Length: 165
Image 1 (cartoon, rainbow, N blue to C red):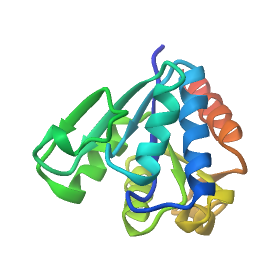
Image 2: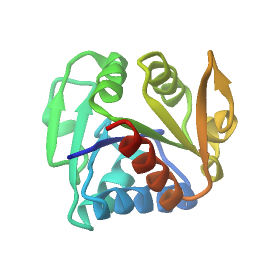
Image 3: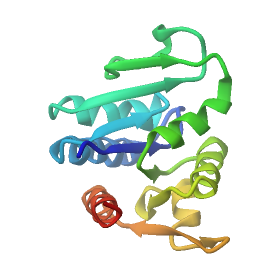
């Protein structure tokens, strides 16, 4: 079965450490032959897509604007929505499971939407931001699963997905 794994995080400038975590997450997703879904722009999304593409993976970017030109260069399928941040719900619903890396208010909204939609969320605690803030917390009986490394996050994603078959 083909899995779609969402990667969420800031689209702004990110630290080198967060960039490495995002790239490694994309790499691990590609190694497992899953499709990476993200918001398609810069920051965490670009780094994760780069990691996936450099390892033979497929990437989908759900863009907030109306132009495919918004997409970072590592996106295979760019989907312009024209609905701004409301596209976060599409990112979540296109994903079978969501991995949060660092992040700010936009990532926080995606985590909330994922939980509301019944999606599992894995937060890489060591990446900082809202991922670290919420890792291990439970919101309305929905746990945010903790991972320390990108490899652990992707392994946990696959464990969850394979249990749901």
